[in-house]
Image (cartoon, rainbow, N blue to C red; front, side, top):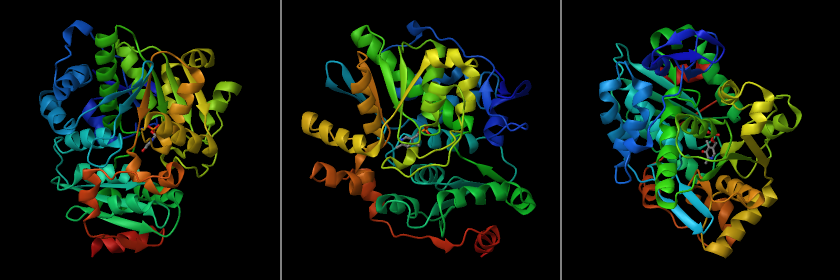
Length: 423
Ligand SMILES: *Cc1c(COP(=O)(O)O)cnc(C)c1O
């Protein structure tokens, strides 16, 4: 199996090269040359998640140097449960937040870390990651104490929640956290500048762990494969999915799982007020916007990076429209939905998950699986005033909350960052 650039099918790469490089030479995103078709009879409902994962992903690893390490990678990466909770006869919640940092980003970050640490690096690699919340903590936790890999986290000072900062700045050893005096965009610009800089390239061997890396996307196929297979075996119906969407990575993984032959019916997307994808569906023109701050901050994306992968799958606008439905949900509806779900089902959902729950009620496709992307306890400051009750703090988060904070304050300036690394 080889991978091609979304902009040129003649540019071909091995999987491990894609994981190392992040982005193709022509600026395109890596996509598989074809989707390996699965036979549902090869699986059974009693399989453990890591074994199931290795079977789902094997086709993508064919003939790659990582292929004989795939089961060990899956054992390490898929080390927590994936509950499918029944809310009522037609509504289920897929809980993707049981990993160490309590968001679905743990799947991608942990899988990527396990892959990268097994690709023979002659040089010590520096992973630089700009974060507005969940990505940084998932990446830090996944790469913590991995040999030959250093991680630099850049987050906007004062613009992440208290609990998020605790998760971003509680590390030591090979993880260095910077509170940047600026916005998320300033953090992202530092990363982009570093990628253009000779010192960072040649001395630091800079690499990225952001969501365009295919090593983060492939493992996300697994929970759609696993949950749809389990669901189909139990109810003999193909479930519909509703996915909270920002950079469209999670959504792309769901479409890829369906392409492979897993029993998935409709896939619908929910966005917050950043609704570039909804506008594209209604107008046929893709127009990136500046991002707007919302209650679902991990979805505050004005130019979703995986749009290019989705439009490669559905190249004609009509085809795109036939396959994808998306609805934008504003802050008021997010709050109302959090409250409604709590009152009606005694179930606490995070603001991101609330966008999908709202869309579920709107579309009423039966049966539906609402995808839950973060544990509500990460957003207790938003949720508690809405439900007028305490959000229980998970044991995983408690562990991190007891750690001492350690971060360096910097201005958004590459030289200052460099000077603080050399120390
Ligand atoms: C990252 C994130 C999203 C958006 O996922 P994409 O793959 O970027 O579309 C949604 N919810 C939460 C909690 C996230 O952390």
